[in-house]
Picture 1: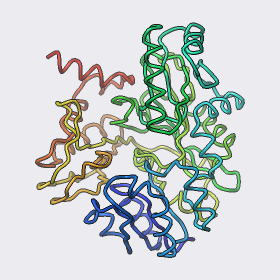
Picture 2: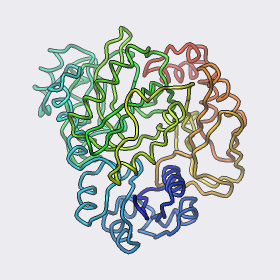
Picture 3: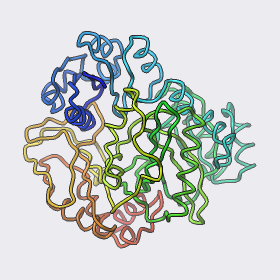
Picture 4: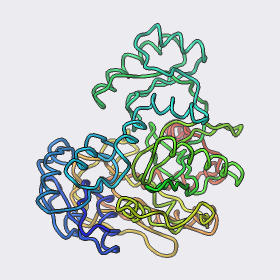
Length: 451
């Protein structure tokens, strides 16, 4: 087992990893930007090193600075959290070349699954259903139009190396497709350094279902059930729950088995997530595999009793999984709300600034993962996530009611947050019935504007 680990991240995930390490008797090293000098993860770590200026490219994306910090502090492993360098195969390779364990999947698996076209081809060969569309990068409008007419509109243009909703456009006709093709190629190159895009069939009103995977170095791979991440805004998840109200035991078994097959086909090791779109008729399609810990991992922890960060660390240290698929059972119901420093009433504009009043919720069935405290200055340079509120109950209705109570208790002032939006979602009868699709939130916001 490791004796010291560096956390190459910030915010709530850095705090989360530090806490797991402390419980395992592992010393921690925090890295921080000049903007994060007084952050909670810096205070909680055993050691802390400033790695650069406030902008991500000066600090949390600065590979030489992070490797230097790791070598100076003599760590044995680096945990990348999520975002930043967590899915950067080059960074993982550099860690290996410096005899530092990257706490995540092998670079080869990361690179393979990071290319959506290569991942689609691998899944097709493994017998896993994929969305109809192009199997190679679309180079020009003629290729795009040919594919769209074959699979029929509506279609979606996606960046091959994309994520987070960037480089994606839905198209309902030829004119829109030609325009979207150029826009997505430019976005993809700017965001990912790769202008390759492809065209897929756009599925009307699907659910977004993902399966948590754990795989060790000895060929043992299991899944920990599904998470329903259907409530999104511009492909960014806002509410997640486990289990899904749309997945029964039979479908869970089928999708779970295919998720395990997908991970094995990719030669995957560590924690990962296989993501699907689920249609109303019960058909489902692979969309991507996330090769890192997910923001929403706590809901899986709450219904399985496992600590996914600790499992990542154990696997990276060379330990085998301590259980088989039959040992995994989902108990109760967990729901997570992402509380962001954004103003939903003003186009979700970012709301940086000082938090003067902070009172998190508590009581039965509530967990809050956060790096925020009274007096904390929310910087304008990073993701707007402030906290994750997780409720767990004996049933979905119980978990919803606990979350409603928690949202009423949660106080963050004076900056604007997404808490009022979450209150609106959790009071909506459609949400209570579980009748959701990925366009749910867009519809709710349109209704709000109409009123």
